[in-house]
Length: 332
Image (cartoon, rainbow, N blue to C red; front, side):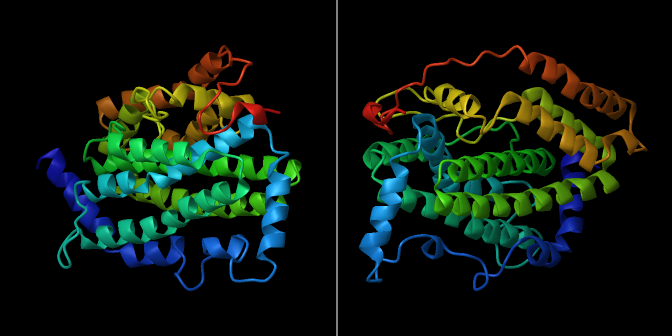
């Protein structure tokens, strides 16, 4: 049987438990928080007072913090790209009946939860008065137009490695922003980012569970897919980030520098996530591997230490890049 057909069989096998995945890792619409719960209520008599308080606190947040918050928001707002990509994965279908529709249900419900993140952060940025919203919106528009290429093609194994890694990376980023917001005295923004981080962690747990189950039924091919993604390196979903009038991908490095400079997401975080996945999937204990998969396992087990040594030599520019999103006069 071809590798593609085996993957489809495995996806159909896992799909039998899709309702339990939705129940265990996602939260019903009526019970989960919504963006309006976190923001000043426009129908309330205290709206103007709450808005003034939000804007006053926002004045004291430093420049790189705003750059990272804007970049995180834009990344969340590019959700249509991520949903359309996942819906095209082998074994996932949008049809109402038949194999694959259960996975389609998962993707739609996952998208519903993720959609709230961009809605909340976008509204916060708008109300804060600290950013050029038109420039932010144009960057989001460009990012959706430009799409992304994460090197997974339509392979479910590779895609689930990617989502397992990326959801944990997004958790780290939002959680660190939450901690910094609290440090700077913005407790409401801190709560917003902490709630978003909580969603990302649940989603990480789901996707990493998918991979764990695949390892149990198709260990060698899953190991090779994991190795493939780590050799390729996990590309962040906003790797094509650009400002208005600039070339595709031209803003991503400067955005990453800001994130590293304030410790929101660093090269060492990448290494730590890799270590966590290796431990979670018990890569060192998986048996029944082919000779090729054994070599892949050996590569993966040695990779974190090798990447850590490289990460230690990375030099981050001290000066902040001036983005069109955030005005230079607001640098602190």
